[in-house]
Image 1 (cartoon, rainbow, N blue to C red):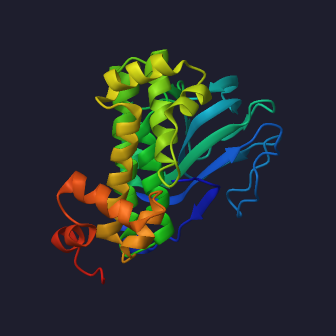
Image 2: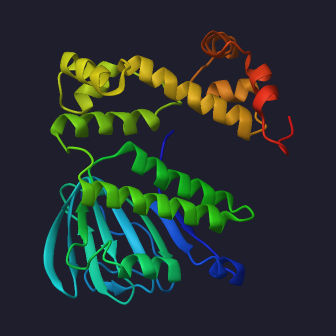
Length: 299
């Protein structure tokens, strides 16, 4: 699935505040090299001039997926930021950050507040002495940010409660990675995680594993071998699994036709998609939809 600039600011009501945790904003910005930063204006309270900095009334996580940059806060000099870094921002704290001109960067962010979060941040799970955590390029973490963007975009009933759960999931995962050192951030791990993220963004187009290896600056033989050791699948098999997962999601959670879904997961022919799906699941696409579809989805 291709990802462009996403920027969502949410309305919070009294019921949401009673929940103890709510999300104010969530988004994604790919900043190309030599581009102005940020790319677009923000509403009052979020306006950001990188030269002057700002003060927020909320906590924010800013996750850097690609590129390099710098962070400064009221209590620290400039801190270098690299891909795989998660920046923690505190309410009432002056700060500024920006990508380096020659690298740009890709950033996810989510802003949140509430008494539940105040309790977590006051119990020494996080510290202003360590506002940059090296969590690495991680597909699951990217998926959580993307899910938060999807939920905010849909803006359905109880979206805030759904988003609160995602924030807690992100917090738990970040604590696990940074405090318990649950995995090694080796170069091979990072290359494969980057590959998985790129594949997730491209389920609607054709896939060439050799081109992907070239994009990651590694040899194809090495990439294929390490990818299979890491995931249990060859790159092409893994990509087919992603297509199947996305197709199942669309069949269950949307009213799109089989032909539309075939196109959305990169098949120009509905017949080819039909054959692929039945071979992998034992069901035709319509039979699968009828067997597991959620109540309230009209076909």
